[in-house]
Image (cartoon, rainbow, N blue to C red; front, side, top):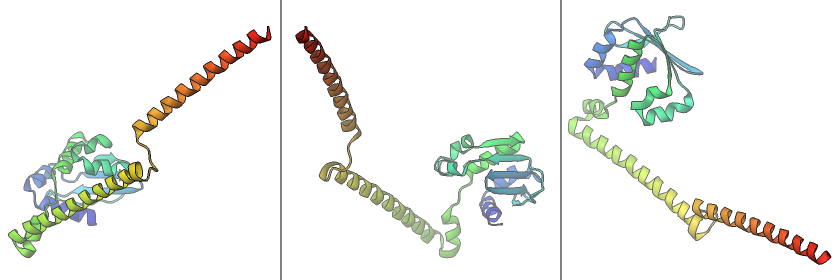
Length: 190
């Protein structure tokens, strides 16, 4: 199972995490993100393996697929987006591991290209990603500025609120003027 292999790869880099999981050997954690359900059993050596679909879950973690971006964005608050049922200690261990385990690309790359090149490759990749983010942000700002100022197809929220207030005030003035006209017509009719 690719998920178990990925988790085991991260666990292999962190002895403290395997030690913590050894305390829960044999327990099954179910992560239910309907329609996808992941079932992992903790092995005696502190690693994980795929669990059978009929294995009883010690802890079940239910989450919505729509919350995955929020969870990925803020891993420290990940467990505030989920519903947990079962063994509280095991759930706490899973929570600590989900917050602490991180993939260190340098660790894997240094086996292929050496430690210095691995650090440089990762720094370069981070710079490229940051550059892409900055470029995307600048393009969005420029497009918004174009449609707000140069070729007005959009309107600023403050201008829209001001316009709505002006329309409301104008409507009230028209209603008052209409009532005054009615009173004047009534006086002239007498």
